[in-house]
Length: 481
Image (cartoon, rainbow, N blue to C red; front, side):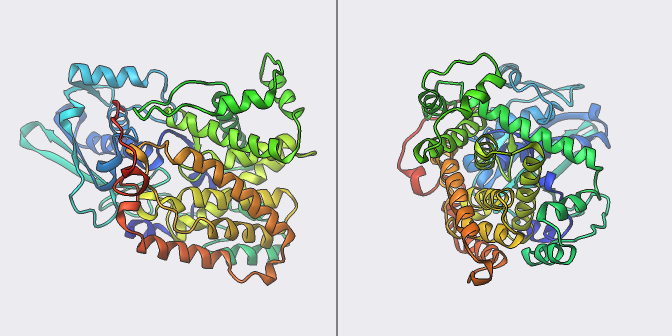
């Protein structure tokens, strides 16, 4: 288990660090390396970008074993060019990366042209020891005058990175009115202030930003989720990467829409709300929504990392279905949903892991399902204790889930697991709403600790290495990713 994650653990974490806009297909293998390269550029600024003559990146551990399928090479190239995944034109990304591959040259930070051939200068070293974290990369620049600069980075899940030797907490210190490290802390603050979970979370978020900024960012997250669902439900074809996985969200969507016509988003949403509400249709919609976002993610699209990209379909599917089909659901409740979900994700980040390379898929789909379960319970009228009960139930039934992506791609079994995680979240919420938290035999804090212990005990072949499980059953020839 990563010492980096454990040390970062109990520093304040904003819900917007856990639930944030990112780019597919992987938060740890795409966003993390991309952020590492942006940080490395910042380090090079101190010695002068113009002094850089050559540059190379070595990928170790899980990054070396599954990085190609996760688009790590693309992320490194884009990051070195100074592109930011939060604002980059993703439609132009393939062309930009291909131009570097073809020419063997890269414009570092958009200013200094240097020789760079991804096939030569991005080195895979899967056997190198990764004592701190299995997602390790080393960036080295050769500078004029025989000098050099080398930095080691750890991509610790959810897009978070840590540079070796850097302070673990580089943000300005904040004093939260209601510090939360454990689920028990959250319940205590809710009891003492007679508040809902989202009220406590919002009060803490004010340490970073004003209410108007909080609402604007929550609305942006909802919009990106909605765009992902809309795009995925209207896009057919085969996913990139060479596994030849066909998109399925559109076919499910079209069958459920049964020929209903619409010309814009507003009409589409109105038609969606008029579809039947029987159990089969409801579960099919949740499935379609989860697949839609996951397919956008697998296609290098922009999604909400919640808490990771591999699990990005769970929360949108649950949130969007609730928002569409629950009478009285409004934007304020949707914001509360995201605040509750983010806080539960923070608990796992602080006390366990959200990295599949460190803890298997339980750290991604399991955590996302737990987040969605707590949030759904809250907006359906559940108490704070019932919300955390739902989170515990969801994780309890994801414990031990392995991460064994076929070909290292975030496709099989990852995409289907998003729909399963969403359905488990709904079931967990229903169990909690009908349950009595005082009679529960397992608390959320106990299941988080159990998840951490399970992660430590899990064999490395089941931690995003493509060395075990389903990854060994299906031969695949990867396309350039």
